[in-house]
Amino acid sequence: MTDALMLDIAKEYMQRMGITDTQYLLVRHLGQPHPHCHLVYNRVGNNGQTISDKNIKIRNAKVCRALTERYGLHLAPGKESVRREYLREPDKTKYEIYDTIKTCLPNCGNWNDLELRLKERGIAMRYKYCGSTNQKQGVLFSKNGLEFSGSKIDRQFSYSKLNRHFTQAQQQICYRATLAKGFHAAIGNYRSVYTDLFGNMGGGGNKGQADAGSINFGSSIGALPLPPNDSSVGLSAAQLQRKPGESPEEHIARITALLNTAAEAMAVAAMERKRKLRNQKENKPKMKL
Image 1: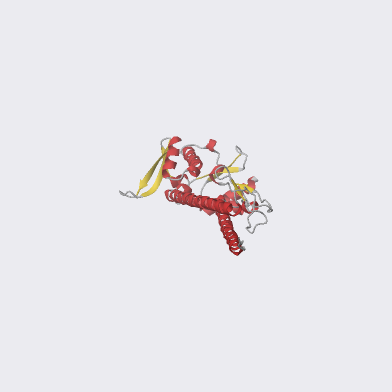
Image 2 (image 1 turned 90 degrees about the horizontal axis):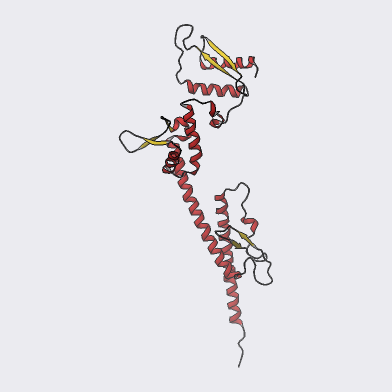
């Protein structure tokens, strides 16, 4: 980043922003490891007219991003890259609130959780209502005597987006509870039909059958015996392992389906064995006394 290149970029910035025919000062600053400059301009143009600053923050962001991409410069990855130690008020407090919400939010399932966790860290939260109704339309956070709307702290912390986050969190909790219920039901059914077909022999089967072992699902469930290798039920420990890239929810849903399928196959095999035994008894020649 030479002085000449920095000057060219600054000139193009002024043109794109519509700040022309006025005095300005460009100063290269060497106080940070990254190359940067400070730009000061006179909002009263050479013709004596005031240069408009309407929507300047929005226009500035668009122009800066366009120049960054055009010249192959570095795009900072959001607020996490901001040097907190150099901030002054009100930005210092705004970023403190941002960091706290960012830390607390993953552990909050609803608005009350968030409010309590923020309160423990010295941040107050209140709602903004629509007129004189009870309909919430905004949320505000305050600390150190300063108050900011959620969207001013960060767009993802607006009332509507936070509310959507909590709605999805509750849906996820309900979904996981349904998955867990189905999984435990599948485990119970599997154990029952396994015992009916193979007996209480851990991972083994009848004499003459190879032992396929068992798979451990943790302390709450324990080891689950697997069908013998030479049985008609196809279920192995490898099938029940979590696959790369598979979420915990996807894993539970998949193995629940596998256990249900295996239980159904074992139930059919058990009924078939009982039928054969019954036929053998019926066809067995009766002894004459």
